[in-house]
Length: 76
Image 1 (cartoon, rainbow, N blue to C red):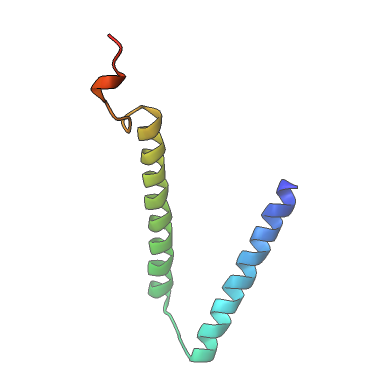
Image 2 (cartoon, rainbow, N blue to C red):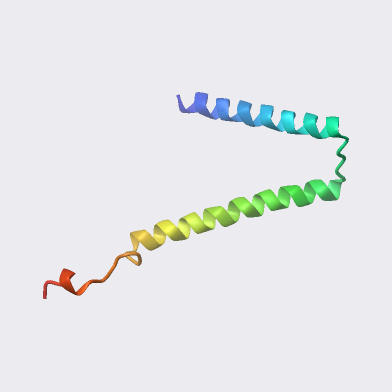
């Protein structure tokens, strides 16, 4: 089941990339190799940034930094 979902996601990504590239070709858009490198670096760094922020969010919640300290919650 997992393999099927991975294959379907890859197929969807392939069709999406094909559609975007064909649309750009129809519009007469041409990117140089520097443009493709910048495009790829932007995508990679965006994914890395999002991953880092998600990690920090879950770590903060897991370590209790998001807990509210209220005087009525203390049972000393």
